[in-house]
Image: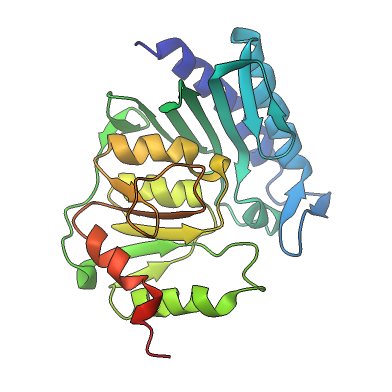
Length: 263
């Protein structure tokens, strides 16, 4: 099926939301806590409103799942999965690294993904079966084949204060195998950078569907591989993810096994 109308609407929504959050960089006035270290700002709500309004204008009967306001149920077979601001903590600290994420799931399949970094003006997007693109130019995963040459990324869950030991065990086990690790603060952009060949691998736990839905389409259409920590096929509704260029995937899975720890 042709998803061009949906992609055009997603682009419009992302650009509107991106304009909202970019204007607030360094000017955030309202910061609230959803958890001990989980924040929400006025930028999250303004961006979410812009996205929902844009989608509902063209697809009023579609269901919508968003990070801040929850789920709007209508047509069960069509679900927009939205993170209006992935990287809220970065924005709250005036760090210019965050993204607007819009994914579309139809009949249980993710068919569209768009991730937009308004500060760098990077628009990553993909349609099922159509390849992955950055600002209109096709992207693909890297060809790095060994962990010692691999630059990988990760993130830490908001619950890290409750379970830091196992998380840091995994971090150490990857650290001593990889060329380097980066922790940038946006799961969606980490995955898109993997799709563009900037990273070779990525792992994280404690994520929600809106964190990964859009980027999952982009990674897969760029030729990447995604599983959970046990190597099972990935779904945004799972709580763990390992993504890679495919060539270092088994090595990534081996590295994050807790039984590898000598402690």
